[in-house]
Image 1 (cartoon, helix red, strand yellow):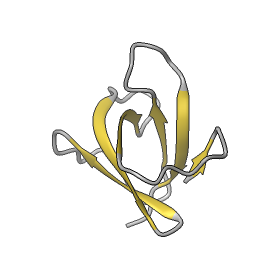
Image 2 (cartoon, helix red, strand yellow):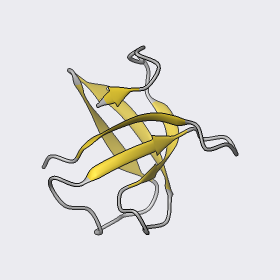
Image 3 (cartoon, rainbow, N blue to C red):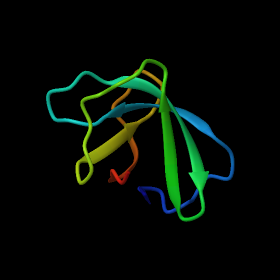
Length: 73
């Protein structure tokens, strides 16, 4: 995960996540695991694959990018 602000969060946080360019955003809980992150979406998703990018946006009504990373299984 790469955090835009440079600050790595110490607590889980909610965000909107988009995995594919045209996929709908989903609400997710992002949790730090070592130097990477884990993401649990509120609803099950099957549209992601290893090597795709995931972009996380502020849970508020703006389009602020919080972080992003490459999906690993």
